[in-house]
Image (tube, rainbow, N blue to C red; front, top):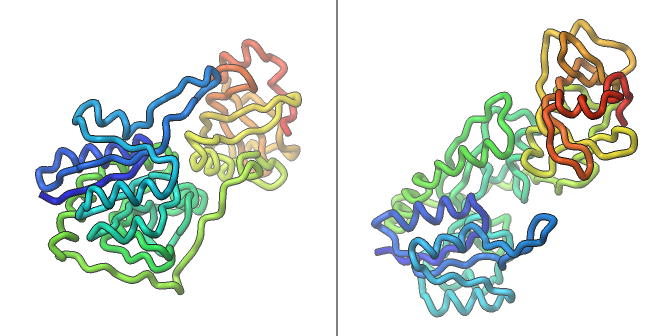
Length: 310
């Protein structure tokens, strides 16, 4: 059997890990995960999704605090593959000199969208499809060779969360790639540096709706890109208001009002009037409050109608 040490942290990683475990060709000897973290307001110490896997399969789990510990784990295990899927920590170069193959899954068609936010970038740029690349892990990022690429269609209202759910089902393809790589049935292809593009780091300025520049379509695209995190927001009476669900209704194109940013009602539906067309609001969350359907929110905030958002 092909021996694997797997490094990953969250639920996307767990899906790939479990698919590998259940594949008769592979034997996972160790799991490397980030440390457990305190989450939510109550700061409850919570296990990572990949750590939870050991309870089903009794595979040793390591949560190293120091980079050098990763290298020691690999030296002890001597795996055929060191597989990394959304581990979210920088690996020491020494850890990439032990296994026969160091393989990673990246969510873009490399060299396009290098960096940490390829899916968000694809949605923001109105791409009709995104990809997942099976690639080498090497010390120099720009040199990472690509073994295989799988396409994933982006539907009109797909969010980042939805795309990640779709990509979980490529775990079987990833397993097949590993099997073919081990037999040298695939050949690594060097990335073309002339085609390289980079994802910018998502900042707080990106989450904020810019009513002076963004149309309803652009706001909706941002919402899709930043769901489930960090969403998009504006201010309602100096309180942060997250827009959790929205839609764009082309029937309202002709009903445009010159002064944007007002909340209006059309046929009992709630819209924000933007610089171009209307954005229908379906679900919101006011600062320090629970998420609410827009109808419930208005029952408690009737001054929301006709207010000007900032």
